[in-house]
Image (tube, rainbow, N blue to C red):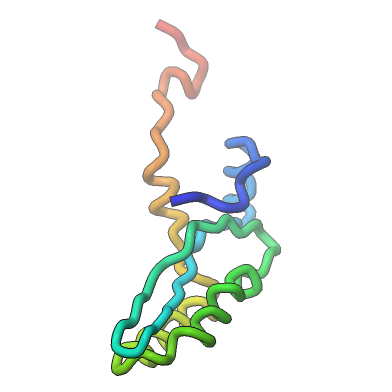
Length: 114
């Protein structure tokens, strides 16, 4: 998955933003076609501290409002689930993203060489 919002940030700046309250989130959306309903996740978005996560996910919320309800029976069910997730600011996946980053060796982190 692509991470949107970290294009011009160094690793140190990114860590500082996360310490200040920045987070990685995924928004959900739903699209229905009569008897078929698809619930999907967006790319990962980095929300800096002070930014509104709900506003950032409005595109996915509007897509669900327009195209999600029409499938029977899952359209309304999945649409409500997606709307609740998005209106809470998306699904926070910061811990998973940070855990997937390779750890620095302890010797390199303190500047020791062998």
